[in-house]
Image (cartoon, rainbow, N blue to C red; front, side):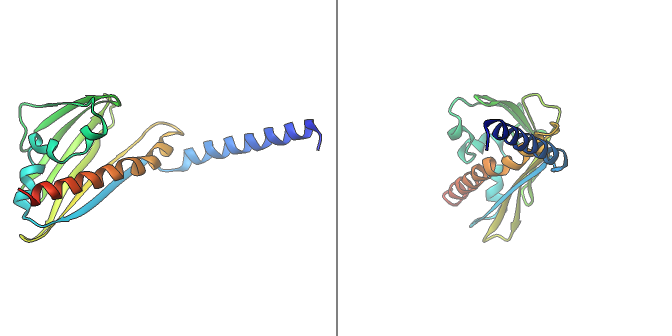
Length: 178
């Protein structure tokens, strides 16, 4: 094969791959959902003491360990609907506000990252009896970035999922040892 043919073949292959990536980026979903759960030997009321109070989140969430530069500022209210916190770290800034808080069912919250207009919904929910509680941590949203947003949405689960697992393991340890 001549150098000219190799160049033409390489350019054709590159063009095909580029068109394929762009095409898939247009048809892949840009929504994501991460969900992890764990069984905790406790009551939902005990779990809620750590989940429903933002001043207790440092005891179980994994974010400060992952980013030692993270600075969290609690809002004027740390419990119940309207409780809030904001943060700033090496990867950016954000804000979280409770939109639901129930000692038997859990919390739901809205998050915004880096002043993005898209809101991410999250929750930490509980189900079970007074002996064992299944705690489920969920985060879902969408990335409205043309073509590359769906690729980022695919990666969110592999990046955030292990952090959720670690946070739930921390929560289990903290609740069961309290």
